Image 1 (tube, helix red, strand yellow):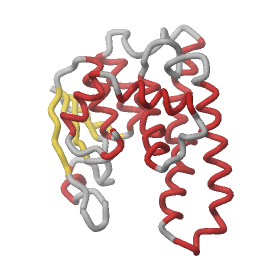
Image 2 (cartoon, helix red, strand yellow):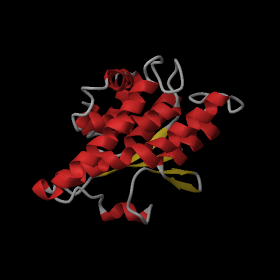
Image 3 (tube, rainbow, N blue to C red):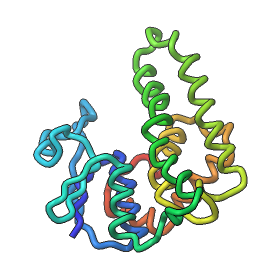
Image 4 (cartoon, one colour):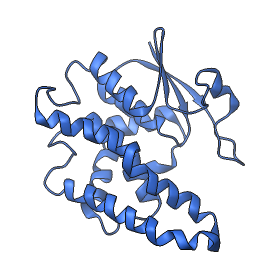
Length: 208
């Protein structure tokens, strides 16, 4: 049985979604953020010394990092589902998206969140942050111009990994200028497996 150590309103929601798409049995161990600091509780450090989520246990294996978990679950348990044929160039694009989410796209979104809390003190940084957001969100919008999902007509692990980017951008009110990106978020959030994962995970503010 796969166990997901799940923190509310976190990246671990996409792991629950992946498991629902694959139809795999799993157990959820829930952790709640501190209402004052928004940080994970210290109990999470018992399974991941960094105190971060997602974390999965599969037998003796304990694995962290969303992209690594998505790759592992699809490779070990997917039976060819939710990823392109590894012998194709499409697979290389798929791997690109697995890394793009946290390697590139998440940084300006996180900076926008944290710098926004500084008020006037953060004002000098906003033009650069907005420029980077336009760069990355515009790129994503263009990549979704001709296909409903990131690597073609079918959902893949790339969409699941990148979903948190679209959801955070939506929560920050950044999707008005990016109709393809907005439609992609709406499309994946309407999937039955996504909705079931939200039920399983509990509170998830970004599903709205």
